[in-house]
Length: 185
Ligand code: HEC
Ligand code: HEC
Image (tube, rainbow, N blue to C red; front, side):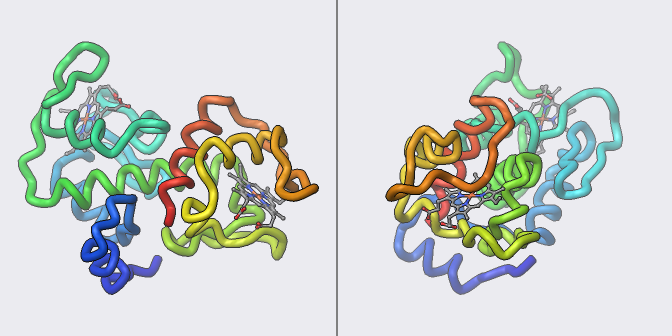
């Protein structure tokens, strides 16, 4: 995992509000400092919880949820399933924590759906297995979520070519995956 403070500074100074890459060390620290591991796992990042069964695996349940949703729940400004979140975040770095949660939710979707067989996402430290597909780190700069969704589902061609990968997950998951990829610019 590479942390890129320069691109982070650049992204912030350019006023880019899209997700920026949070390093694993930094993200893990924000998660454990916030005591999220008391009740939640982050399996894709190898983080277990101390207190089963309370909360779920955040990178799984957060598929398709927005950065604002994550922040508002964590600050108790928004309910989850009709109930306020049991604790309000008292740490100093909610931006990093929330951005990292969105990022590892994307990572979870990409690895679970085997996109990383053929695609790297270097911006978030994901490497690929085969030589086939390209790096998806900036795919959102040229493609919109709807297009990505349609292309991966093989409903839209690129030029005269259909996508090479076979998608076998749910439509909801594909929507979440496409929405995440569209934020990568
Ligand atoms: C005392 C236990 C507890 C702690 C500590 C805790 N949570 Fe939760 N959290 C829950 C429960 C219970 C739920 C609701 C059920 C679920 O989604 O797992 C929840 C739900 C959530 C949700 C909504 C999940 C969804 O898919 O809709 C988010 C986001 C969340 N927590 C973030 C955090 C973050 C970030 C931290 C650390 C700052 C944290 N939580 C700490 C118990 C906890
Ligand atoms: C068997 C290999 C393979 C798998 C698996 C695969 N892809 Fe691809 N994908 C390709 C190839 C080859 C291309 C065309 C070359 C390129 O643009 O990288 C492509 C192109 C794309 C593009 C268009 C990129 C652009 O800039 O226009 C997107 C988006 C994409 N893939 C997303 C996914 C997602 C999401 C998954 C997982 C659900 C996935 N791919 C799985 C091989 C694969």
